[in-house]
Length: 218
Figure 1 (spheres, helix red, strand yellow):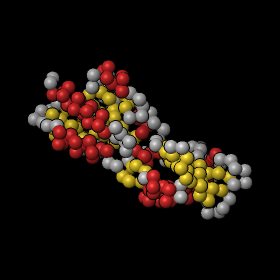
Figure 2 (cartoon, helix red, strand yellow):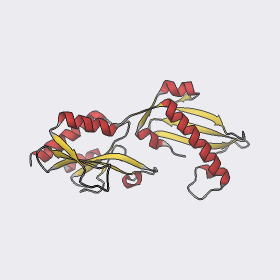
Figure 3 (cartoon, one colour):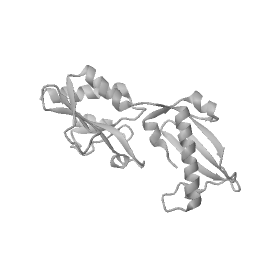
Figure 4 (cartoon, helix red, strand yellow):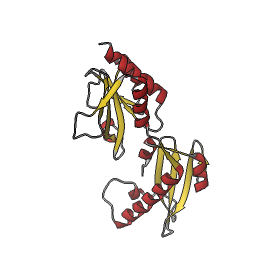
């Protein structure tokens, strides 16, 4: 099962993973943990942009596919998923540190740009429009949107910001990792940035300044 969504808001600590029992494997870490019944074990893999849990059948050494499948499952799989979820929560609480990229960018804008923030849509409390101070023009939009809206196969929502940039720069930036075609806005002139824990913040700051300057001069 894919748990990589945790990596969007937190960063793993290598020394904590090793202390927990993980072993270094290439660029990442792996842990084998027996299930409560002893007939299976979980194989947990963590690396930059990767966090997966597979259920392994001890009698065959094979991955138990129904554990990770999206189709309907029975009581056995449900119990194993619950067990895996508890293990994942323990790993995250002991080995990860929270990174609030949205708050970092919001704070940077507030201290470096002459801007204001407001939410004109009461039904979307996580949204915040970034406006040129003293004007109605806006250069950014903070949002919380489903991962699937960005084309990512992850459950739940993620924090993003839309910025205005020259069309040629947008095309050069799109990588579907940190930079995406604008969600819910003109894709020619706007771009969506994923506010993940591994976001290149210096670049995000530069692009925010660029969006601000582009809108302000009009």
